[in-house]
Image (cartoon, rainbow, N blue to C red; front, side):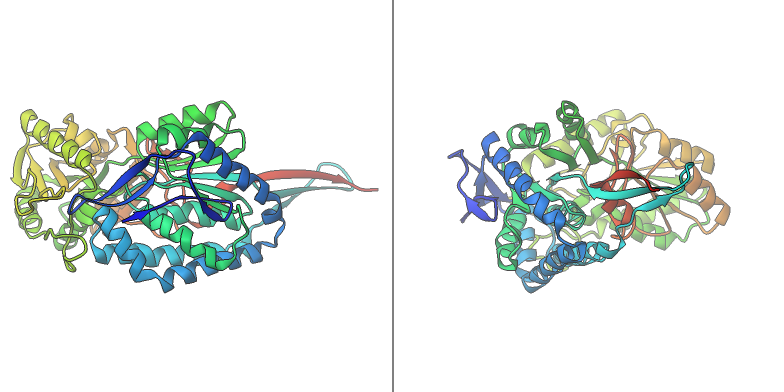
Length: 479
């Protein structure tokens, strides 16, 4: 069993706290590692280290900073199998998907390194003679990244790659549910001679370590991927110093299936979007609206598809569709939500309970619910599990209105062969992303950003990189 330390100023150091947090394998409920409980002093030491390293880091040519990102990608690829197994073991992600996460993370570092020569300012026309107005893009300073447990390694890269290439230094707080892969990465990057203090990793609770990182006047930007409640706490903590925040929060993605849709494509895409990582993905399909003329046929086929979903141990079930949920609290929450949906009148067509096949672990059956209404909790609130409620609609206007009737606005989708339907939906759905005739999953060159309570700012692509830049305008008068 491994016992991880804090990674501050280029080396592993003991925490100021002597207690630890136990990390479990969700499939077996066995303890596989411990991380430090963490203290405010740990957080402040990491911030001071990042602050001291930032001026020299920012003064490096961007292409030199990018070379370290390429080195990070290389070391990930050299250790891709080990990292995938570590990820799968700590969070019950099926090994194939875990390997994809590791490989895409390496690609993400390379992609952001490619922006080194593309960070651009502007020359703005002046109203005065013999004057130029220059707009420069400059780093904010010290970036704090708070990572989730569902895609911990990739989301870590989202926060690290963009912040480092733009000249910021960084402090990362891994999730206390799934920190192991990130801490193994901290060990690996010691081999690439990254300047001390440029990248720091501090474990601990959000209440103590996270709060200290967010309240500090050293912090220039806070990037969080987490729940709406966590986002609200971050905003409150950041308020004292008016610190910039970039938040990716919850989702309740609707999938609209029109009568003219390619039904097989819609079925495959929606099921894939629901069971990926056991439904514990913020952009996965959370509710389905099906046009009434095809509703019965669609639900009949969807029932078969959900019954065919395979569930196995994450490491040994090589071809499994899904595995255990991440924790006891997660399976308890989902069980309660399904029980409440049944009490409100929903009908369970598939699943609806803990998986009886497994004596240990937090396995929940793939679940399909019908007879739902728009005001039900299961339609309005994020489930974050393999539970799919289905409703019918009469007109596309009605489907769009029901989709928008939600506090979240992260992702959405429509399945239709009608161009007018597609254009109507993409122009009127109140979500940061809309997928057309495909599964819910973003691209690293896009921009992953939520509306409403799903977040502020965003990640990926040019616009995600620019989250870590601020502007300096120079009015240069000459004679």
